[in-house]
Length: 76
Image (cartoon, rainbow, N blue to C red; front, side):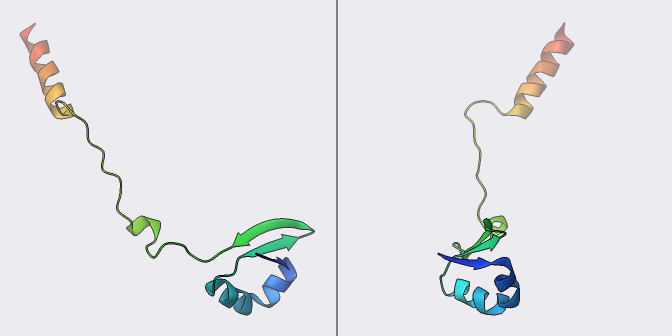
């Protein structure tokens, strides 16, 4: 992990980002306080391309439950 000032990051962004691409992690400092951490990407796929969670429940489906209630209401 390497600390760089905001001004240094602005002036040398291309070189610093090449270092990040090589595996380094940068902490950008402004006025003595850390404002950003720049690190290499950890996964090959962006989050929006990764498989989503599949939710499943046991029992009757929602559509069947709604239709069952409609039938019960019509009987009364």
